[in-house]
Image (cartoon, rainbow, N blue to C red; front, side, top):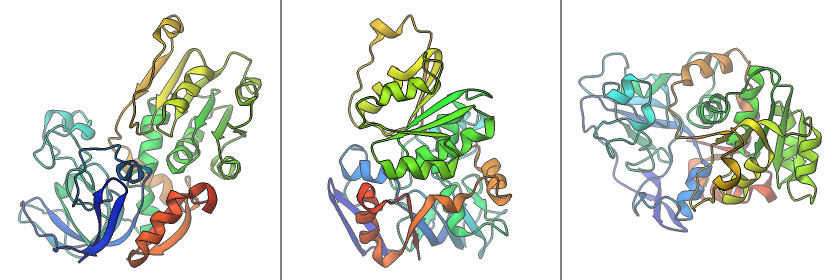
Length: 351
C-alpha cells in the first residue's frame, strides 16, 4: 500500500510500505476513506515530538471501512464504516475505567500513552491501517454523517472541547478568549458556545482566521500583531480580564498572552502542543487565584459530539477549507503548512 512516512525532522515521503496485518485478536484492519493533517503532525515534522522515529506512518484521524476483524471482535463487522479516535483505549486498565483514555496502560505503543497512531505505531495517512483495541477505540459512523464530518470528530472537536472548554470550566456569562484560531482553536470556539458565554474573543496573528472564527461562534476578533491587542481584549471585558483564556497554538508567547489577559480567579486552559519550555512567573501569579490546566484529549466526549454533529448543532463541515486525494497528500501538507497564505483550516484527504 501507499502511506505518508516520516523520515526525520523536516522530511516525509509518500511511498510503498507493507500492508498492515492483524496482530492481536482485538484488532481490526480499516481501509481509509478519508483522513486529514493535524497541527501535531507539523510539530512532529519540526522535531518537537522525538518519540516519533523515522519510518513511522503519520496521521491519527480519519474514517474508514473495516476489511478484517480479529477473533475477539464481536460488535464490529467487515463493511462497517467507523470513525477512528485519535486515542486508542484498551478499556480495561485503571485509567480507562476512570475515562482517562489518554493514559491507557495497555501494551500498544507504550503503556501510559493513549495517543499512539502516527506517534508510537503506524497511523492513518495511508490506504490501510491496523486499529488496536477496536471495540473501545472506534465509533460507528451513523447515517446522515459524512466521512468528512466524521474525520473532524477524530481529534479536533474533542480536543477543543475537552481540554479547552471543559478544563477551562466555561460557564454561562463568561468572557472567553481563544488564542489561536486554527482548527483546534475553532473547535474550542464552536463548543464554548454550547455553554452560553457572553463573549467569545478569537485572537490570532492572521486576520483571515480571526474573521473566519465568527462563522464558528466568535463574537469578537483581535489581531495579535496589533500593538494594542491586549488593550483591545481588556476593553471587551470589565477591564479586569477574561474569565477563560484558551491557548491553542503551542508556543511560549501565546501561553504568556493567556496569562496576561486572564482575570483573578480565572482559568487558563492550555491545549497547544509545546515543543519548548515555557516560563511560568509564579512570583506574580501565586496571588492571582487562577487555575492553569492542560492535557491530552481523552475523546470520551466523541459520542456526545457525534450526536451534536448529526443534529447540526455543530456544523463540522465548516472546518474544511481544502480537499485533496491521498495521492496528493504532499500537496495537502504544503497547503496546510502555509495556512496564513492559503487560508487553510482543515484539509480533508479522500482515498
